[in-house]
Image (tube, rainbow, N blue to C red; front, side, top):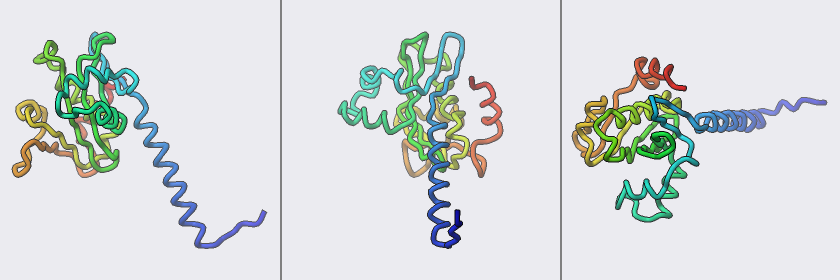
Length: 183
């Protein structure tokens, strides 16, 4: 077999290999993850989500079922479950390279004020996909105290946008160490 050594083939071959590796990494990062705490579980398996319940929680934020389905399918979703019953939800919009945006974090009212919201947020932040992101953002019109207690800073000129300090090449070492507790 004769080797073709034309310079024009190298960038195409190199780009294809890089694209394939990036897709493999994306699929690994999107594979379902689980975190456990007593009888509670956080899971990123989209098949476990209860879209009707999520629609009730979000109310008018995403009023159309078609738009909700599109948002869920285009996001990395974290469900919080007690046994198998969904009691919480968070949605992350990300490119898994630069930016990690946490939206729609919700805990069922009967399970609030016992630390589950902070734990769900922690699971979002310790997901392997967040580790390389340089910008961690949370969007909320009503959770300022909660987000600030959990290390976010309100953006002065953009109400409802909260930023989390990250190391130059991803999340801080303290969050990376917490990743060791992930199952």
